[in-house]
Length: 374
Image (cartoon, rainbow, N blue to C red; front, side):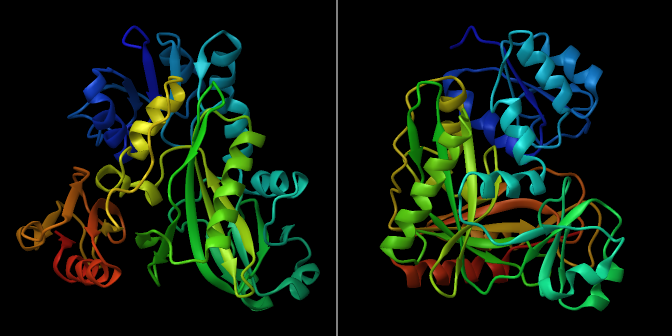
């Protein structure tokens, strides 16, 4: 394991936590990252360059045995070339090709019999074709993240607000719960899921404000989510870590929403809350090591995204940090980004508790006291 040279495309906050997780094994991955102030810098070696540029990725990857990525927006053609040339690329380029394009994801789900909300390809050329499909959500094919690239279309008048970017319309669903399951698979075919989490979204930014685990859903729904996650990673023949987001509609039906082929925001709490973190499991999966025990070691856990406050841009100040650190069962992770701006992810906080009421009280304390200003 130590002899394998590992190259990672991207060095943001996921790269930071990936580097922290492999330190105990004395792995020394190298990260390709354009930002000279990359979050991973204190913990890993960084080669400065664009992971979107075909020549840069090709040249970077030539020096490594195993190549992976912490962001979907990497040059697909380059990693295909590297794989064809004998490099181990995980998750495989064939997986990324499906998942990085949300429309392609939807077609994959439908073609393979997975339950998902109805959708239609969208073109601005004849808007009258879509009136009967509303209300719906317009989703950008590629490049959307953290709520960006998603717009609600409630009536035909909303079509004028949509960008020219390629996208599709997804039928609106009456959602009872939003759930995520992270599942890992190694080259030996071993598969393990983490306990399902329930997501609570910020009402304006459309990104996860906090999540709690275990999800407060029926045993049947929980089992369905875990089984679908296992079926998805197996059907993709994927090696690595797959985050699967689900809707549970008002009738209790489970629908697959979206997938991400990497460590995910919905699994950050596992660093403190589980026997094996999602980041350690990621390394185990791509290096074909035995997958770790995913059991949660605290009855309840939550993760709160630490985002830039409205009205503040500049060098971040973490107001209320000492008050929050004085609380038992509260763990603060700061990503080290040099500039804050409204709704930018600047860190996260994990909370563990013995009861759901205690958990929610601690979550409320963190949200009310810890603010990122400038």
